[in-house]
Amino acid sequence: MRTSIRPWIICIVLAASMTGCALQSPPPKSRSVATHQSPPPPQITTTQEQRIARLLNDADYALSQNRLLTPIEDNAFDRFQSVLLMDPDNQAAKAGLQAVGLRYVELARNAMNRGQFKEAQSYINNARSIDPGNPLVPELEANLRRARAAQPVPKAYTPGPNETLLDATELTRQSPAVIAQLAQLAQRARQTGELVIIHARTDAEGRWIYSQMREALEDFLLRGDIKISSQPRVEFIPEL
Image (cartoon, rainbow, N blue to C red):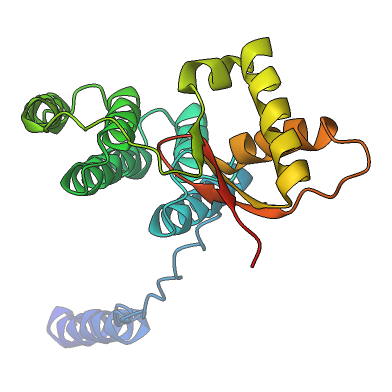
């Protein structure tokens, strides 16, 4: 009896073992999941950044047109300064101000080469006020001093036979003496019928001279013209 039971026990054990193997689930296969990387969100430009970009663009255009300090509120300097008020570390605005200063240095050199020393000094002053640390400014000013010293002293103007000189200092002051002189010259024009050529340092000065001569005449039409000259004077041209 013992001999016949042992084979059955072995078969039962083997069957149970095989059943356990059949019921055990295989491990899940690993799946490669494709990861989708979303694009970075669009960069949002703030209102201030837009305004700075617009100011820089307008400033560069004003610089290209030589609108450096004028006209008021429509020049390169004011726009670059406006950018720095909003963004004190803005490098484009700082470079722009240096470019404005260098443009004035260039204008000063050109004026000095033409012998326009007063104009050159004005440009140098502008360059210094915009960029005080520019090393070209003191060098250019020294060149201007040397050019002025080498300039020959201008000879005094010799008036022609039909010319009357006007004192520049009295004319600048618009003194009673020069007003009386212009009244006398107006009376000469009335008596002789000559044409009057007014030589003045500026157009505004010439118009003032004409108005004074015109006021000295009641019902006489003063005929003539205005010309720009370094020596103020009144010239009479006989009528042909």
